[in-house]
Length: 179
Length: 144
Image (cartoon, rainbow over all chains, first blue to last red; front, side, top):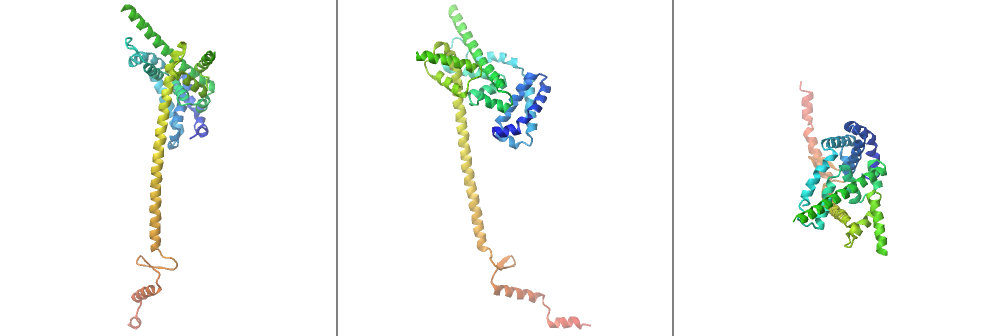
């Protein structure tokens, strides 16, 4: 299924899915994000969509699951994961000299903590080579919304990375001072 | 002087990048810039981020290559299978067309005959089986 067919067969479900998502989340901004995410998921399986008897039912099911996921793990859960990232990247051990490869791995770990929609959009743009306009077309939202999510994701990665790097520097300096 | 200009350019592009406003082409340029060894100190913190994307892109491309390789293999395999099916089909057709009769023919006990004399002989024999002789007819008529 190419983009044109996707626009004809899948995108018209948007209004219906948005209503459903609004009912489930009771929060409009989350509802919009969930619908965008659902369309990106559908886009990812576009080659197999013909195998489903009803794309409508499939899309509704995806939205329902995304709503439930969001309900189970709210966005602020990511702050808890930061300690985990530090541990995994050896970031919490100031004695260990970190090579560039460790920093690259840390970026990957930070990426994993982004909210799902931001994660998908940053991957599509920075790794898979989609233009923002294409992502907007797939999700049926305007390009400004894509740019906003992309900007938030990129700034978040930078922010957390700098925060962890500075923290580490301070720890190392502190340890040296007391040594 | 030239380096200074590139530095200004990269600063501008980075601002644009973090606002989500760069095109894929510009992002490619940024990644290439940060993959070089000599990067000004104040930009060093961006190196890992773009190195990560560069790594992931090559992983993604490898995946695509493997998938397309697998697809090619499946296509080759299915075309071989299709050729085999066609070959079997043609040979069966040729074989059966050797047996089959053209023009006028008669089927007797599941076999095909075109030779007129044989057919007549068979026909006569069959008629003999159901035929009634003169005596039998008279016997039937004047029995009473």
